[in-house]
Image 1 (cartoon, helix red, strand yellow):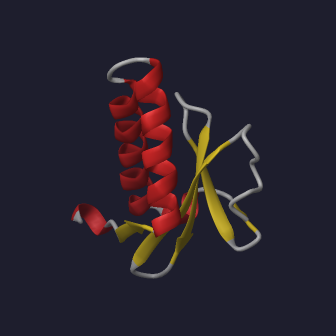
Image 2 (cartoon, helix red, strand yellow):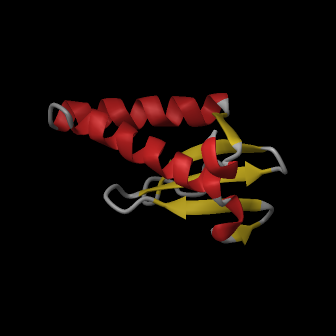
Image 3 (cartoon, helix red, strand yellow):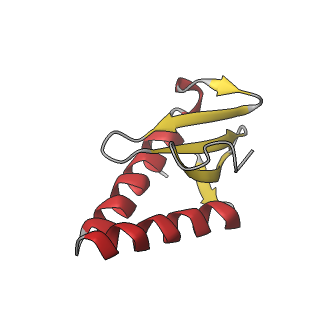
Length: 97
């Protein structure tokens, strides 16, 4: 990763969240699922550049997506960012905890 960005990866549950969200949006409108994935990927790259920038709660950090009602929940170490959930803000927001 360029510019001091940390490596990043999605936990399997977060990858499933992303896939499920993308499928739901794609069913609503063609191309919207891809847009959702692109927004998540851009957010993850931003997080990897400065993971401490976003608030920490109960040992995990959260990044709120702008266009979609989702948050990215992640854990950062000195060399890696792990996305642990791609959580919808209104559909059982505490389910991933």
